[in-house]
Amino acid sequence: MCKHNSSDRRIKKSKKAIKDSFLLLMQEKDVREITITEIVKAADLNRGTFYNNFQFKEDILDEIMDDVMKDFILSYREPYQHKETFNIKDLTSSTIKIFKHVAAHKNFYTLIVKSTVWYTFQLRICHELKRLPLQDLMDSKQNTTINIELFSTYQAHAILGMIIEWIHDGFNYSPEYMAEQLIEILNYNHGQTIVIKQTDNPEQI
Amino acid sequence: MCKHNSSDRRIKKSKKAIKDSFLLLMQEKDVREITITEIVKAADLNRGTFYNNFQFKEDILDEIMDDVMKDFILSYREPYQHKETFNIKDLTSSTIKIFKHVAAHKNFYTLIVKSTVWYTFQLRICHELKRLPLQDLMDSKQNTTINIELFSTYQAHAILGMIIEWIHDGFNYSPEYMAEQLIEILNYNHGQTIVIKQTDNPEQI
DNA sequence: TATTTTAATGAACAAGTGTTTAATTAGTAC
DNA sequence: GTACTAATTAAACACTTGTTCATTAAAATA
Image 1 (cartoon, rainbow over the protein chains, first blue to last red):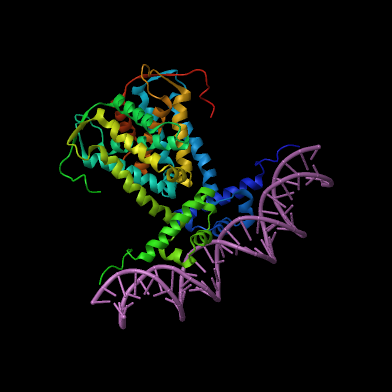
Image 2: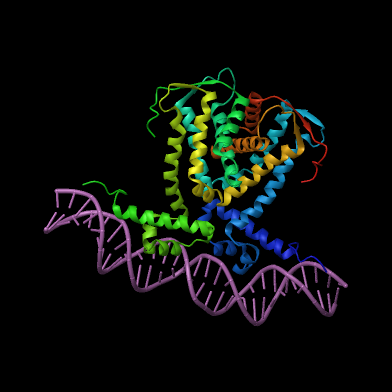
């Protein structure tokens, strides 16, 4: 009676064949250079079958992401799944699971990180957000074992993250409020004096 | 004698026409649905001219990004351009310039943020990195005016940023070291006890 | 201004795209 | 096992793609 959903074994088989072929082709070349015809030939399917199950090449990756995300969530929750409380000091085990998850899906993550438009822009923004304070400013941060590269990466992406969210919610806050919040978060974290380096000339771009 | 570079007025004109048309078309539909033929028709150019100047549709955006990035860097540096030192408390003016820059290029940022593959995955990862602690954990953070939504956004993107960098550098650190560093950065920022909420069932995904 | 250089053009090419059709085949449900 | 349902298939469609080549026209140089 029921079940005209995606539980049909034929759909599963076709999708799996397409996904597998696509991942293989992604190892060889850029997503933009992979043709639908190539994919279905590699998957040994009719071209129409692709269009029955997907609209764009990119939709294939969407489905692959589903599997990875399921494992991501499991990894994140694992450390506290059977606990009732834990201190932030115990967070090691929690975060280590995320990084292990990424390491486990190394190939997928490497492929996915190498794609597309937005990512290019994100890289550039983050590059500047990292480079500018490192180049222009001299932090008084000392006597910690913090990896300064990773720390500035952390902050660059954090700021860009706030911007992304702001854009996505349709600029519902004023630039002033966004700045205020960033300042509060930064001050909450640390409140050190920064000295501008005089070695480089900040006038130049 | 020299100058077989891109200073030819024809190149500039063609590129500008293509960029303008592309941005207009992007207001209407997804990048994947825009055809090269459409772009050159709108720009009133021969299709070959597109291929003289670009390889992919996405390359058009790369050039548009150049202009935006120049302004971004200027905005970032403006507050301390003529100073020698400043305290982190004065950072307000610095960060506010970034957010004002984004607000000034509202249309561009909104278009660019809505595109492509990696971005989809980033959204999902960040969504989980925000949702999981908010849903599973109960923070003891109080008596601050910090916007909890923005704060968790900040942290989600920060963690993902570290992961991106790690991937990009070819997994040159161990998952353990990455976790250590994240812990150090987090502890450096705050060191509060977290209590797991009992309202939701963390077993469910 | 005349000369040289080089970008833009239009036409033509094989191959890929996205969609539709009717026929076939595999899966589900009884 | 049979009947019904729905996915896959092959063929055909107009259109887009990426490339090449000879021709035209605009810009840089002297």
